Length: 235
Ligand SMILES: *Cc1c(COP(=O)(O)O)cnc(C)c1O
Image (cartoon, rainbow, N blue to C red; front, side, top):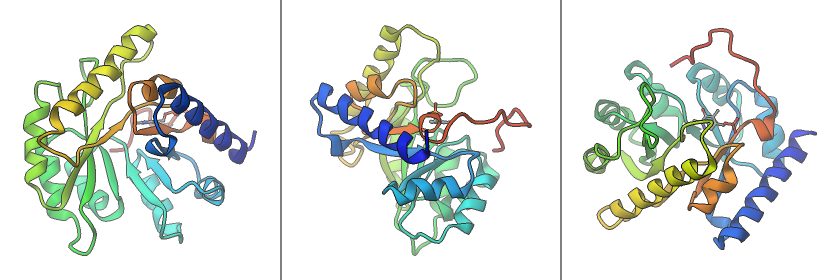
């Protein structure tokens, strides 16, 4: 199938999941995850109206962003972040989904160019409490949210998670439900914290059933990714 056809199929899955969950379809934003894929594939999806694209690997992303001429593409950084990469992220992206440290938040704030609107951020939550996985615990979430909220060049927009893989559906459902609960608990204090970035190719329906507002879909739009030769993501 072409990217055009696969994009359409994903949009239909989102549409059906929204009907089932009785949520308005416009409430779920599709972030097409183009990591490791060439700009030509991004542009094929763009031609079909796709505007939100997610990238994990900074240099790969920066090459595409530099070569792209469409100013209405919205770039989402969804990869692991190290301090020495924050400037390029602050300068080139509209969204970060993977914030998990105060120090990184501070740097992104300080390095966000004055002329750009605040960087929208989702705090990543290690919702399945996995060892050596990214994200803050639910216990540490309120403190990080409070810090981000004090930073004028960041907008605390939502929460993000990647639940543990290979779990029974009921366990994954619990993880998504816990995310929605965490968002609902923070929202009275932070009214702009509305987004739940959760759901990938394999579990977008389950995520939407539990209130996802942004799904991040790579494989089912752009096809399988080749294993990265370095094995570890470039941070
Ligand atoms: C790669 C990636 C995705 C997309 O995953 P697919 O299974 O290919 O849809 C979503 N979110 C994050 C954080 C990713 O790294």
